[in-house]
Image (cartoon, rainbow, N blue to C red; front, side):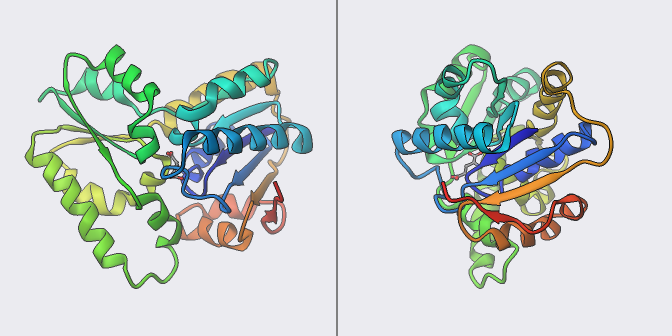
Length: 268
Ligand code: DGL
């Protein structure tokens, strides 16, 4: 069983990529919707949630591989999670700074991220190691992940939000960025707003596919995916019905069909 988790719906973009490369592996997805967003919370709080969720997935769901499908949680706690479970491979998600810096022609890249990721030492180190030869603009995007959580529901404020997203992207393009890194898994669900602006002007960098390939490499040696039909369990720490409803609305209807009954409430 492979356990994938995030603060909410964002990690579903990673789950979908994993489901594509590992069509028969059993998956459990946990959305910590009682505590979303992580990005505006203190590092200690995020760390506590990551360790609690990791332990729950291993002990209650017998996960043999964990995917922290959240840049914020990875930055705050992937090291501690690995230390607590040395026998379990843990795959984290980090902004694609390296591919962006390597491929940029304008030598200017931008990283869209939550506040917590933007201030993290881990991101600073990533930039120092892989992007010191380019100009990197880190853009904290407060509120964006929360809006993605409700975007598929009727949302009267959505036009304002779309305007804000478009203005942010347009400003980055004007300042010469030719690579824009989606440094939060929630932002994959904003492509309909971002792509029309960046097409032909900048490349969007999302690491869901490389992360899924890393999971595939580890799963074949450690998790031994069973043959036959996959099982997908959906868990949320609040409003599980919203998680299930979001799947088709986010274009992940096929995953929804494969899930084992309705999403369950995880009281952790
Ligand atoms: N999806 C998460 C990330 O990749 C966190 C969003 C949030 O809860 O603030 O950073």
